[in-house]
Image 1 (cartoon, rainbow, N blue to C red):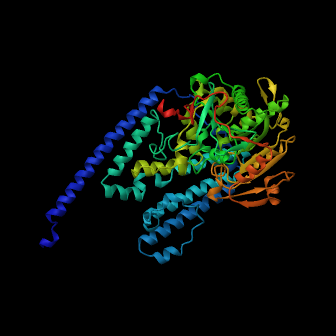
Image 2: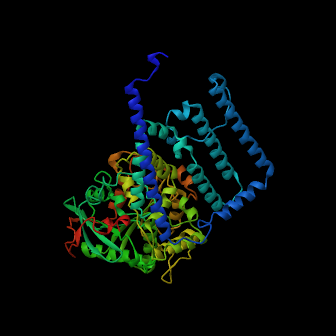
Image 3: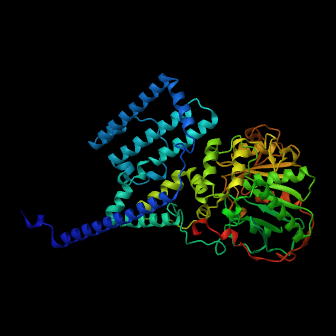
Length: 606
């Protein structure tokens, strides 16, 4: 044997060192994995689990699915035959590629596949015959499963539930989610000698500790942001508080302001600073710049202390906040603006006050708010009588843990909000990049038990408000009682408050003068869309006689950019004369600087 065929000492030493480094990293991977498993078992031992074998009540829907599929055996047989024929064609093409017959392989026709998405961006998913087969086989199967569910003869609510869980199942089973099947993970593990797995599992351990034994996936750099430092920065003061809310008044940025103030009622399912994310993405700051005296409610992040709060007591809290706004400004009326579930609350409050002849509200604005829950978006898959009973079990301590709602929202977009981070964080060992919106998304809140039960039961399940059957504190509250001017915003791609449902609810406000606006984008981006960004578009149409949103759109005018200036124009006409700007707390005093203590309380820091 020639000396040239023997490895030199440097190559041998490098190979030995690489092997030793890989072995050491795999040993550390094993140790961290044991610690993660221990944390999980410890948390499981401490947690009381429901005895319900089907806590999300999926069995009835999937039973109906199977009945539907087997009711037409010929159609099922034809679908199965087409699926296996396509798998055979795929295997044939793969074998031809592996034998080097690329031209012959390209002639093998395959059925149309679902979109690949970002999860298959690595070159090997397309250039390596084995990985391409794994990908294509998965796409073929996932498409077949979802098509079968979609085409089945099901009740609308059962169809929505089965489609949702089928989609989550196939997204979870993507080969990109498994280290041994993901070429990007395998490549990184080889190049970094397993150090990527060490980093990733350390992040997983930290996320389990942050979630107190449950995996709380970080979607952004959690140290890059801080509420009050680089988020929720608009200058103002907390001027009043009780046991469920703080009331913030923002400092004026104009010498004069409109006489009538604006009170924002945000959702308590999230924190209010989505409307004051930063200087460039702050509706609060923009409103102040337009010459309004702006107040916002900052809801408490509840615990056992709020176990006796009800929908009625939360409404009373908002009503008391109105009193403080009027006392601070010396006015008899205030505009009310609201967002998401805060809008549902604002609608019941407005209806109650109008019913009783209370004229403190000058107008009410709704951002992506439902009052008609017949088609209540993708969150509806989590809600029926049995799932509410399961939620009640979780709320025995008086509140729904924040992580429960966070998990539900993440499941709505599991491929983007769960599995992409599982791969990037824990397998590739990449630290998430700073992203303000995802920081806010991770800043979850708990739900007061009685308030949440009432919301799910009376609105999501029974849809009592739009049926004129809602009662709060024993008194009827009717949507038709609302008689103040209404500005109602829906967003075109909203999966939480579907625009057609928002439009339908707006049309039920038969005693009110309603301006309905459809904005581009979705539940958040369509609302938090500053004019300076120059993004998206919106549609307006004064005629709301059309029974459907599609009919309304046929006569609508499209405008480019943000809808905020349109709202400002509408609001100004109803805001009275200009008066000298008001300093926060000038009448009733100041408790602390904005954004206040309530919004800074994080559930993972308790």
